[in-house]
Image (cartoon, rainbow, N blue to C red; front, top):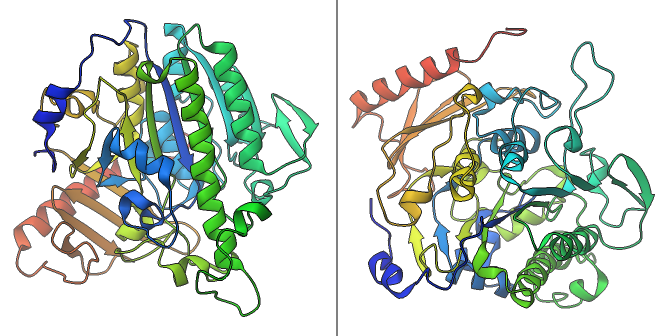
Length: 438
């Protein structure tokens, strides 16, 4: 598959001569429940995201970027380990990341990387026979600052956060505090390669943004509840997220590190229309033009904003329509860092770097999903333009999500051969899940 916009010209215009030979810094920025349609580079016009849009112009917009799960913990467990949810050990929101899994941080640290996680970790219940959940400091991160508990992470103006293994008093808007820590980390670690995992809490519950940010949007958006500026707060969360990403980019520029830094921006899953969101994302159509939401395997639940930027090393101003999964991040980051991926890790993701750099096309493959918890039973598979969805063991539905991104027209009757083949491979994938205790 080809880039949608001038890859050859972009590569010709970009030079690697000025970039240093040092291992690149790697920054992974993940929003929480941010819809595909909530950012300017994907068409949002009701508010602006100028820094993210600039990042998109300076890199590759990943038009078919998929979260590995439609909910927080399984998605995070998958992209941190490069594995599908059924192989990472985190299939439910209450699952804790098994300590034996290898994270991106653990993959990069042996190559001399300083590692940090700032923001939301989202632990699960401790595994049988253990008393404590797995902490980010146990999974390859040198530094941690933020929330380990998902419910605590609803707080937008927390009074306490974890710094390492110690609770410390704090004052301020959570995502601002995480950014402050990120800037300090970059300052201190600028002389060695670093991996920074910046896991913001916008736009997850609670719907709240700093007053100065909310004021920019009051009266400019439809509101789900009369007399409450909920949409203004939601827009404020997105624009403050944009500003905080901009603060990181500015610091990299000041330190002369931008060309030495690979940045990926994305979201852990699609926007939610559930009760805690108070109707805001539904009213503002956060997943447009897609069907579904968080906790579903329609495009709205798993297709997320995606940008990859590395000036001089990745083409600028391009759009990729190749389906990728966030489980591809671990092998891609390892390749960029010159780090070794041990075959014993059994990762499912693919190294995207050669295709991003235009050296070779990504090999044809199939991507899979399952969400079989909290009363849900949905599985899905993608091959190229086509997506198979099976809900509660019912009749398989087939959609061409390139021509029909809203998944309105079931074409299973037109392609029974593809339905049969994809269903067979999906069933085989489900059987590859290790048995409990196995």
